[in-house]
Amino acid sequence: MPIFITYATYSQNGVRGMLKKPADRTGPVKALLKKVGGKLLAFYVTTGENDVVVISEAPDGTDAVAVGMAVAASGAVSKVETVRAWKAKDFVAIQKKAAKLAGAYSPPGK
Image 1 (cartoon, rainbow, N blue to C red):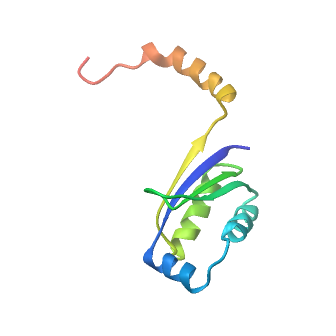
Image 2 (cartoon, one colour):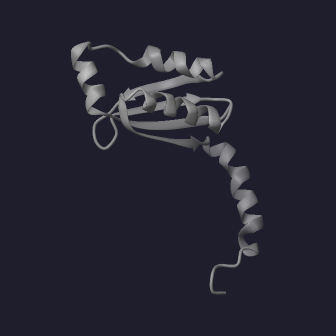
């Protein structure tokens, strides 16, 4: 199953809710991923530009993006970004495809 990394930033409402009722948010995220046939691999609260990093498996990108949209719709986060991740050994096939295509692209102005 594809792996996705989701970065999120809490909104003021999200922070307010956490202060009102402190809790580990891993369970709700795990349950949401399960609803789309996915699996939570890791859930981290971080410092810096992003407040949360979620590593998950989902059947496809539409499922991973839908989970992020559902969380964003709750008002708890102000920014969600989901990216696809590959294990290095699996990415070799993509590199080989790109190598075959590299000379076939004509850049603008050429």
